[in-house]
Length: 263
Image (cartoon, rainbow, N blue to C red; front, top):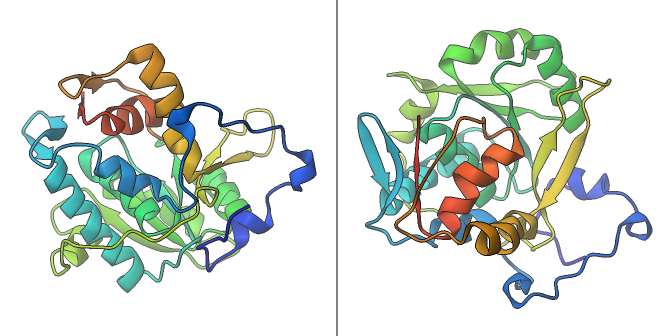
């Protein structure tokens, strides 16, 4: 494994012993990633600044506008919430532009995104928070009640900012932030996200995905099966906590400079 950028080493410390890993082959030229790569930074730079990135009923963000929003959120996370590289951030919300921007911001700041299904309730959120040792959360205000209830039961103190409403804590803190932010110099095999199962068969389990994995799902599957163009518009309903939704609605369109339309 490469030199990690993570100050908080929780995820790397909890990876299985490498002797238990399958053989990982990156024979395709498209998968020859450099040692240092930040998936969010790569995705945001894949689109032309003036092209649409996210479209919704009453507006749209270009890639430049999305990047500016991501940078402001990254500053809130690091300057106001105490995120350090490797820290896990619970992300709770429906598919909205600010939810997507928050996902990018966590990863660009070197954090580990832990997106959760909007339907989860406090007892389920507690299990995820405790297993991933989460201390920071970004939550859509309309879904904050269950997270607040969970925060009373978690093993670690949980600092949560709401988003999505006028005057919400995240947007209020963003208002004073500059719109530039240097992506953390993560290794290609630094963990970027924890994807939790729903726990229907017992305790929820998390799969750890590296920065290179996020890019590889676009450069292997999407590039060869979907063959997107920058003029394409993706849409769909699966929440991005479901990695099918994350790929189809966030990673695939961005990797090819296309747009996502929010239903």
